[in-house]
Length: 275
Image (cartoon, rainbow, N blue to C red):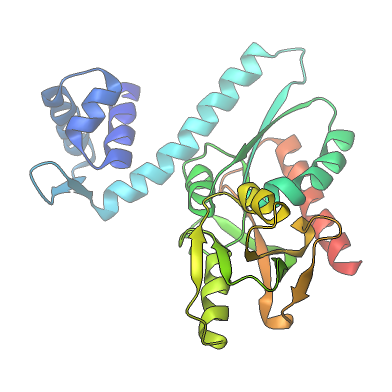
């Protein structure tokens, strides 16, 4: 049965039986056959064909997928407990968006590392959509994003607020703009509309690259105030240009240490809000 679950999970995530077969190193007919066996066992349809290659999961498939993620976590936790009898090693994966990773996560980690010295922390930096996907698919225990994404069953909570400013050569006509999927792009676009600006722009797909270009005197950009280098000119934009970072956690935490880490993160947020 575990074999069928693994095949189903891959098919659900790829929406493509051929791609699932390639990822699992088995034949496409084997994938189809295993999905059919699972459908017979559950007495329901799991996928509906949308095109020659793409499959659309049914509501029953989504229920099964979410339950399997929890089952997989239980199985991994069982293996961890067996392998680590007499040991206290716990792994915690934290996935965060760019600005949070660089300017906020280090301070939070100083608290977590001190309080949980025996935990093996693994940190990842992605865009907000990828962070959410990692938490949804249980590849990360906790996430931090800078966009108010619809998170479904994933727990989402406002975490910290972040002030945006215009920084760099304030007299320049050149704007350094993030790509349109970036969290800060929404505010940049809003500013252009508000001020009726038809900008001369340079698209830069990395926040650290934006900072380095600004330091070289190239253009100006809307960036987080905490990322403005010392002595660089900047202009405040007011309360309408404050954004929220959001804390995500997967919907199925069982390990007591991970639950304690969650509690510590939430306490950290309340403390920062009070400062």
